[in-house]
Length: 158
Image (tube, rainbow, N blue to C red; front, side):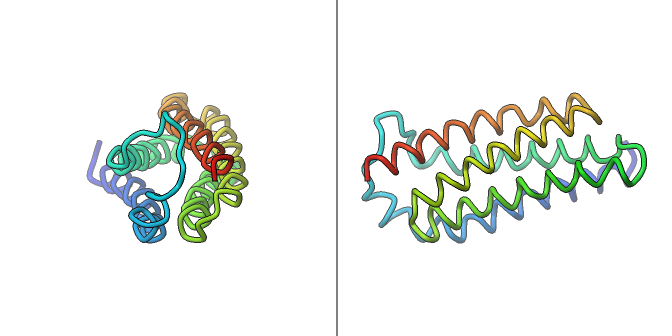
């Protein structure tokens, strides 16, 4: 890998991590008060796990984006792939805004369902360009599935 490739990889990861960082703006303000006071299911992991998990997942998203982007043949092949990736990234941020920022498990549940669908579509699109790019997103969809389960239980319990 030459310097240009390293730069593109770093830019892909940085773009994803930046969205994650933006999401923490909504999250941190609600963790100690609102979120701590919610009734949560017995399988809720300790709060300290979420930060490292999301940092790793955003890094994986960046690597996946890097792998899928150059494999497309022509502009027409890149557009849907990058569009659906961008949509899932926006939905990821939107979930933080709705669940934590607006403190709404109901709106969060709606957003996380849309996010899950967008991730699945991203995996399918990326698979066409690069199987590793698609497989790297599997931990992400598993984590979002778990987060959706937590979101739904929090909605029900509160």
